[in-house]
Image 1 (tube, one colour):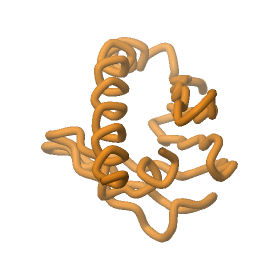
Image 2 (cartoon, one colour):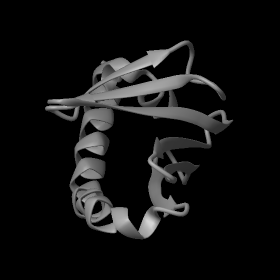
Image 3 (cartoon, one colour):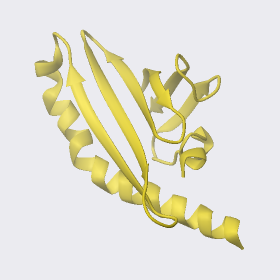
Length: 124
């Protein structure tokens, strides 16, 4: 699951596209391209096969995406994502961040379905 997720080519979230400068490692820059805008992030923490924190710099604020991959029994993995908005300007960005809060669960379901499909193909 981890190797699938850390391969940016697998990130499928139209209309967004993603570009990673370098490997999926601490300090690498990630660009999210949306119609009319580009959002820049940095990978801040990585514990291989376990978790990563990606921070998006906003005007006087930081939006963090904390991903965790917990191996469960058998071939099962629990994947969680925690979104955090912080900084001096965070309060003025809450309404925009709320959109991600609302769309994240569906995005997680879509990601898991793609991972399961890829894992199933790898077994055959």
